[in-house]
Length: 303
Image (cartoon, rainbow, N blue to C red; front, side, top):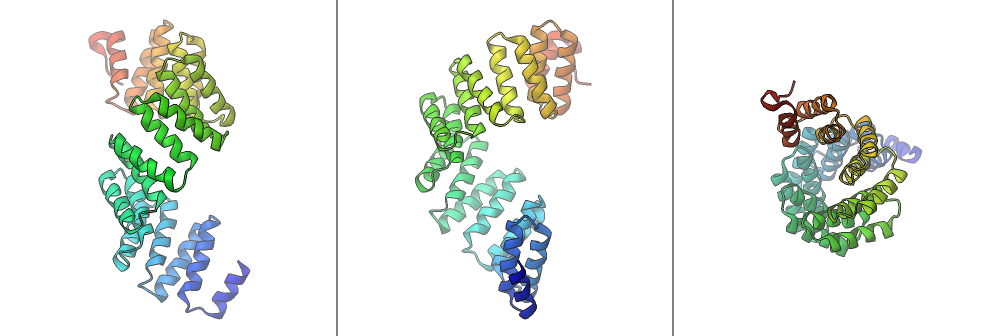
């Protein structure tokens, strides 16, 4: 960094020096300093598309999605062939739940660069969100062809599980674990497949391995609780769901599941409280509404 600072002092009107140093700042996590350098690069050269893209990425890392989108759009306006700007804008749009526009941006990035593995992966996630499983799987296929990663195998395995193709889902998740035996999400997803196959001991074993690797993974505790509940191990299920809620108190699904467990254990008051809390988080959560209806009859409502 001292070398770059000296270069700026020696040539303060070279936009590329600010740009290069800004990238270094961004990679080191100094986002405000990165934005400052990109501001200077743009001041010196207002048509520097790469600087807008990089500044947008720094804004994105700060979760300032609107400013990020504005910068990515300006980069595209200045250079419509900059694939990274479409991919980056797609990510920001995806995070804003503007999934159709995100898909359009990922597709444009792939038109420019058909070997952009990141764009295939991100578009696969977007297709999955809108329920287009076959299209998601096709995109994950491309990622694995170009750059096989744990994330791609896990995502394809999850999509295959959603289609009921359990054998191929297990194969993908096994491959993810072979690539990284400490990939907790691969164990969680493989546990989901085993649970769907009613291999409840196998599912519990995978969730337990995920928890060993990532002890603060609320989703692993949640899923293990559900597998134990299905197996009739109610006390263990309750302990797991309590832990999941302690880690993430904003999951309507977790509160509703705890309501089901408490209902089975005969704790109707606790179950009602949990169903009501689930509905506070998500007023349309049907499982919780049904639970209240069972326990309260016509007086079922969220408070």
